[in-house]
Length: 75
Image (cartoon, rainbow, N blue to C red; front, top):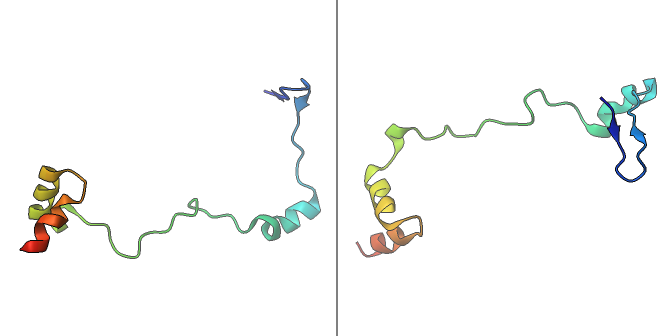
């Protein structure tokens, strides 16, 4: 299915890479990443067992406004 230029109405046609373009593709665009560039975190993600239940309860009561830090400053 062809795409069309909205202004001129001409069909949009893509060309294939030339041999020179194929040879220099990595120089121009860098090496292709096989996983989309995603890198795993340096530290493992927390699990439910790692949660501080008391802190989670305080955040749940106060909302996500940082008010739980005000409460914990004094004591």
